[in-house]
Image 1: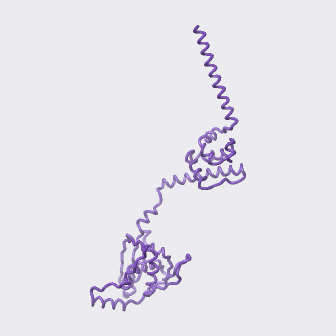
Image 2 (image 1 turned 45 degrees about the horizontal axis):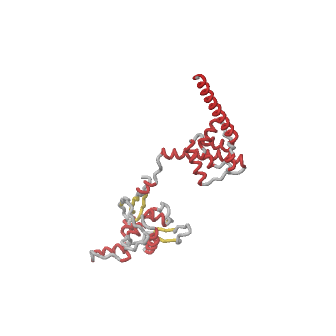
Image 3 (image 1 turned 30 degrees about the vertical axis):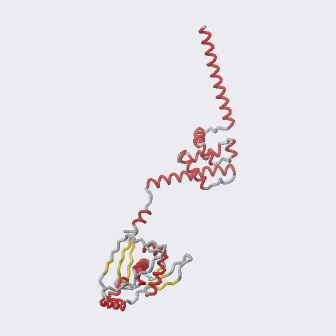
Length: 299
């Protein structure tokens, strides 16, 4: 699997009975950062914590103890965006293994040392990762150099969270974003040409652009926005300096004006109102004359 990680560690790691579970985890994690050329690695505490499933506050204590046991040397204290450099070393643990074997022979129930189970930081949440580990051990003439290969699988929960959204949804969002960019560009260009300054752009304005595009449509929104600034000269629009909120409020009306190529000015609105009033008056007169004619004919 592409997301699998492998750590090649010496057999001494599992033979060293001085190591606690936390120290073993940190040591294996450090070996997993090692390349084929050098034994020096410099991962951050957060990177080690993520790979081991431990809390970052316990990493420093574990590496300090590993240095005291001869498994590594530390250079630097970290901090200020700088990681500590760790040089991995394989100590000679043959006397330790022999002493442990003798101790086991003398007592089958040796109690654990108090220091073998260091306390967990109050803020640490010790959650075991659901990872599968397979240990492959090959035969070699020098047992002390025999490596252990540990496979660390990526956290399935993190893989699930990092999945990309559905293809259709991503395409729809991209189309909407492209239409919003085109609409803002058309509005901004026309605004600069008319007023000589850039229009204000903030979160509220961006939201209005998106709402306008959704109401009018992806294809027509840029043209309507440009028409609004270029052609609309209503008094209240001019007083507001062609505010985007006004465009959004009367979106459908301005779309109709754009489609017909005719703007509704105050004078034209008054003329249309007067024409309609005259028409209504004429219609009323016709009705009245028809009624009088019918009344005379009835007599």
